[in-house]
Amino acid sequence: MRIRQIGSLVLGSTTNVIVDNTSLDAPGVGFRSRTLSSPIPFSVDLAFVRSTRQAALDAINAFTREIYSYSQRRASPLFVVAGGIRILIEDAAGNATLSSYLQDGSVTLLSVEQSSSGVIAKIRLSGTLIGSFITNSYTAYTFSLLFPYERRTISLPNLSDNALYAQDYICDINSPAGIYNALIAIEERETSAAQSRIAVINPTSATSGITFQNWNAGWMTGTRALFSSATGGTITYVINALALPYDAYRLFIEIFTPSTPINARYEISWDGQPTISEVLTSTRSWYTPGVYARGFYGATVSLQLINVPTNTLVMPLVFIPIDGVWVHNVVATPSFSYFHSLYPQTAFEFPLYAPPGGVIYGDPNIITSRHISIFAGIMQSNLVGFSMNADIRSRRIEPAAFV
Image (cartoon, rainbow, N blue to C red; front, top):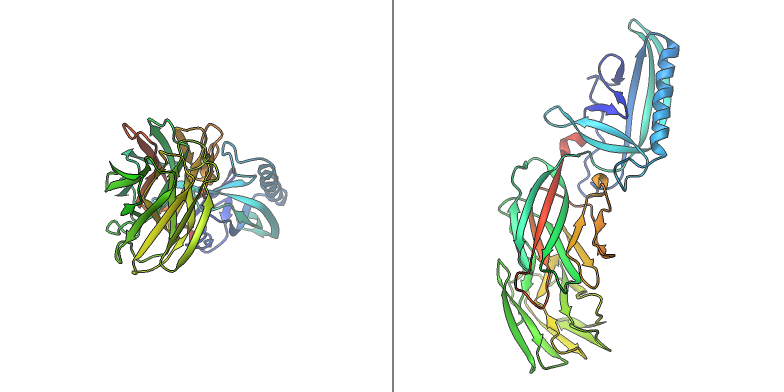
């Protein structure tokens, strides 16, 4: 890790020097694969070389004053980064493009020594980095015209296989009338050949008064159940033994009611799973009844709805792995057409935002390789012209910078 600048202090090999054998390199902060977005302990020894003792001490005073001043204000123009001083390090090409912010900075005077080059005052700077070293510039890619319930897999172009990326996404919904709840998933894949583990299971059968409707989901034909005349009934889903990749999943169900349900609820069960029941509301359509983990064993899922309005729509079952997938549940009534998730460390506005007055549930700290999948859990009654565009903005993280 080659530190190039701390605040306004530019480091070199003559006046402001990192103390170790190579003059510029400093011990790394360590690469932790499970906590890349978490605060990181940081410590480095610096030497101020000046012509006199007083000049060296004045340099330390100016440096510590700057650390204090930056700790008292947000890292403008970043919105959510609390007070801290910016640290710039080199990327693989030798350019000072990767940065993080040091909070709770502590400075300790180690020694003041006379040398042939002048007076050397050594200090130890320690504190906590808010997160990974990241470049502020980004590479953009657009997922155009994502269909309802489409899962699209890609190796993002113009990115490196040797780096990780902090991800933003900005979504615009086309013909959004009536959509008040959406589910978006971003999945990390190990390689370009790795398959997505996100799965969607269509219904197999239903009781009287419930009809099926098909639509083009891009990667598959989706089937939803319409309560055309019934106000209650049961939908059955058959999951074959090899239908899902071997994993542990969160099970999601979308139930879209055209009017406010009264005393309505759903009940769901499958082989070995006692009945799970939840009240239905008109303020959201996505529900998460539980965890599904049956390995390669199949199951028959029974979903019963009680006291629902006619024209209620029930979508296919959605299975999203517990690990390696960032899931965002977007809720904004009565409808919305725009929402975004921005990586907090580089966000210039609200990291999670869904106007007007919406809420996004989920973690905005998305870090992936360039191999990802996206799932567009959007749905409304009228599917004509209904789709979503998602702009992905990738900011480079270099694991070698941590070591």
